[in-house]
Length: 126
Image 1: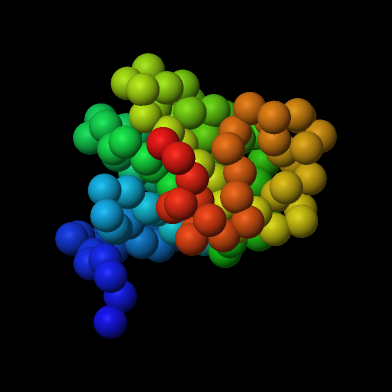
Image 2 (image 1 turned 120 degrees about the vertical axis):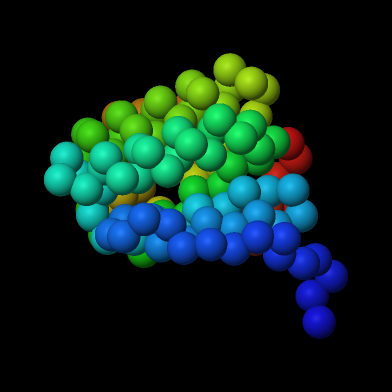
């Protein structure tokens, strides 16, 4: 039996947001599919809504995201700005090679906190 307990797990909106849950004070969002101009609106709505709740650590798991364009990056930059505004922490995890390349090419890998796994992200100091 795990030493922590989920206090909430819910389905997100269809498409790119597959799950949202809270675990030991962290809010974790799993995204799936393609984060492009056709799909990013629903992800934006969910992530901005979570920022309004001001979690101390917001973890965005991108392990099931197969493609991200500038609109997806823009949404994550906005979420980063919002979390910093209330002294929260945004951590991205599970980036596949293609998505990681986008962050490296734009040098945003130096701006975002990026971890390999969700577990690693959960154990970073806030």
